[in-house]
Image 1 (cartoon, protein in one colour):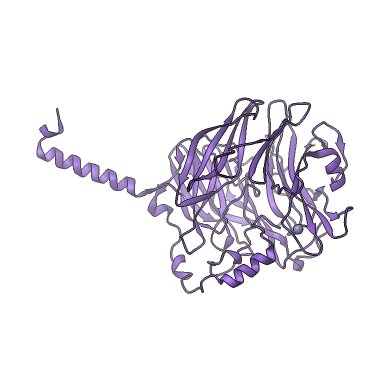
Image 2 (cartoon, helix red, strand yellow):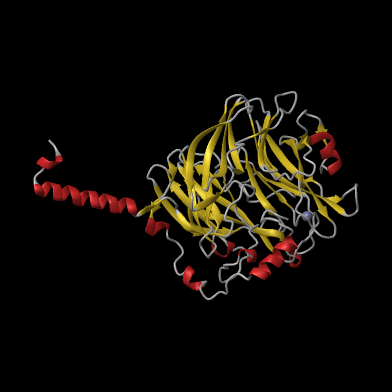
Amino acid sequence: MSLLNFPCRLLAALAAALKMATLAIAAEVPFFTDNGYGNPVSSLQHPAAEHYQGVTYVAYQGPHEDPYVAAYNHATGKWTGPVQAGVNLMGKSPDQIDPSELDNHGKPALVIDRKGYIHLVFGSHGGDPKFGKNPLGEFFMGTKGKMTHVVSQKPGDISAWRVVDNLPPFGTYNQWVKFPSGDLYLFYRHGGHRSDWVYQKSTNDGLTFSAPVSVLKHKVSSASPAINDSWYAWFEPGLGETITASYVYHPCANPKHNAHRQNVYFMQMNARDGNWTNVQGDRLTLPVTKESADRFTLIEATGTVRSTHGTCHVDANGYPHVAFPVGRDIRYYRWDGKAWQKPVSVGAGHGRVGDGDFIVDSPLSVRMILSTEHDGDNEIGWWNTEDGGLTWTKGNILISSKVLSFGTTAIVRNAHPDAVMLLGSRDATEPHLYRRMFLVGARGPLGRLAAEASQLGDRLEAIKSLPPPNRAKAEAKKKKKLGLDDEDP
Ligand code: ZN
């Protein structure tokens, strides 16, 4: 029977149903909230999200640079939150519209303990002298918040939070490593950029932590009194009870600061005895200095070409695979058991490539999520290799837009295939700093009803009275920062 043969009343009913369906689709949006703020996520503060017992929990920087948490239930397809989980002392009120007024370093890292309680650490860029002397680092560029630890009041419930005052206030670039046993390691830089990178271990679900242990040492350079040795590092579980560290060197100009970073390094910890070794298995003396890093842990010297902290995962042999942004490339390195394979630029020739993260399926098979920009298309998509990283082919696109660009995170811990990465987005035409947040996976972005995703309330009204960003002031600030982005210093 053709449509023409339909009785009129049935046709009308069909049309009404179609219209309703269209309206329902129109009311769905691909983002889960519009109240990300500034640079709401990064791959450095990680993980930003974890999948636990059928729910993916995500954390990001929201209004006032405070930490916000939302949760997606994979069985019901429903979102809860976002909920404000704490207060970032670096936040300004009202919310700002000038990006240079934001610090952006106090983003939350999230972990879920054995009992299902959700923990966040956030809120500092070196801490504040009013909290006391920093024994393992320096303050830098004024007062910079307080590292803050909050825990959900109930397991698996994001609705209410409490502060747990059990960590030093100085930490920056907080990162959680969790073992299958439930042991937690919190890694971070113990202060401003001239500070040691340390970890603290908790064997009781974050109730107490061991004293900080310095892993990478900051000091005046042996090469020149005008340079301070400084680092940017990324920590992740390795094979068994090991933790990997992939890192870059920052030769910080003394007494000022500069943006340069160089070289790429790797080392690992045996968590059973706390000993660190290089990739060949030679024991390292802690904290690792520039001299011993160069001698024992260097993957590649990049010289004047700028490198940035990367991501690292191991294969079934425990061998590391590492990806670092170097110059304009994402360089992939693989340890084959004897040597580092010659680095390969992933996504080369596909426009501007931004940092991402990856999954090692086997020593030769790796899937990487990259952000690329090509002919005005901003894309987050998979890149795959089946030959150990020698060649890469473009895979499925997770999300793309001509209007929005996307900021990436580390891959969701224990990720469900439908939710592998949390993304912040930016619409360069919007005059405010609020960002739509996306959770993407095999089915694209996991959206929700527009009314639920609309979380700004009267915030757009509240910031209307602010003066427009002062270009001269912004330029001066930019000059002072020497082109640093918000991962610096
Ligand atoms: Zn510096």
